[in-house]
Length: 456
Image 1: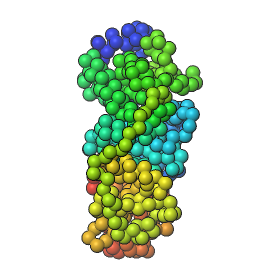
Image 2 (image 1 turned 135 degrees about the vertical axis):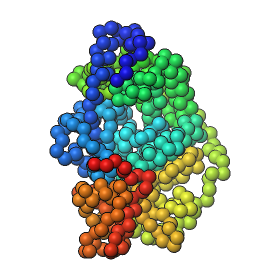
Image 3 (image 1 turned 45 degrees about the horizontal axis):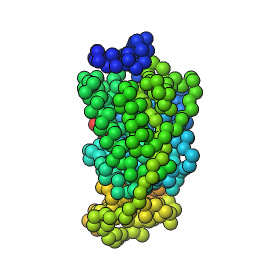
């Protein structure tokens, strides 16, 4: 790792003292721990042959003794687990302190999807998670990872925080893992060290404040803001939290922790109920989280949306698409665009329509089918979804070697006994995507933009 900036060291000396700063800087030169989080919807398991131990603040979190090649593990692509830094799993503890069960959650700065997949694991079926990313390319990565996680009660949006303001009081929870100066990622990202400066900290703090201020109208009174960064400094952490409380109207909610977790509190002497992860104390990267309850009123106003309130497109082929879903009576079919058929839980259809009228929505629910000429073709997202009917398509279990070849979009030849037509390609019974079995060969329908390029 490059030498840490002298101004960063001076900043930390002021915050936590010389001895703590020395210990922190030493930890930032060490190799970070490896951790994953299992998918409870897909009976996720630790990669074969690797010792693991629990992450104490998250039920599905696991530390791995060694780092495998995740890219070449088919079960990673099947969404049976997510590679996530352990400290950021502390979101689970924030959720546990809420005094009601949220029904509408916005993960505002969600790409690539670690915290969104965690939110979806924490929420009950029927609760609506909106995973958002303002930058289009990153939003498409988020959409891929949410599709692989497989839960249908999700929408992926591509919008800026201010775009959500029209949805006044719509969300019970807004999670804002705001863009930051990246101090907590120094040992994983040399670029973060090179780009850090005191001026960058000031700019980040102001940007973070603007993000929260812009989205604030969308959070209902009594709802929760989960504010987090991967920094140590007070400007982006404690100072912004105090600013939110005083200027927008909120109160901090304490999150109890166990001493052995190594989580630290306020560094500014104000005795704020906040949570710091320093890598010389806690087993994870640098991370800050505060849970705030909104105390200010959210005035309602008519939802005067532009003529994006489009008439629903007819769902031709809906009967066929519905037959591909498990318990299709739970779902309402719709067309997100002229080429696709999607399905949303019927109880969430109105919420999804309101969301789609307000912000750019990549998809809500699960993409089920795509029109290809006069044919309706099942989507890769359907194969990975827990909403897929077990009996809709034949399944073929590939060996790990075949599965990696499939994920590279290589041609496969299947056993003659495999039925012709669309087949779900699986590895250890976990779906990866579709094949179109023609008999003498099988067309690989894995998305080109998802394919792995790494060689063994």
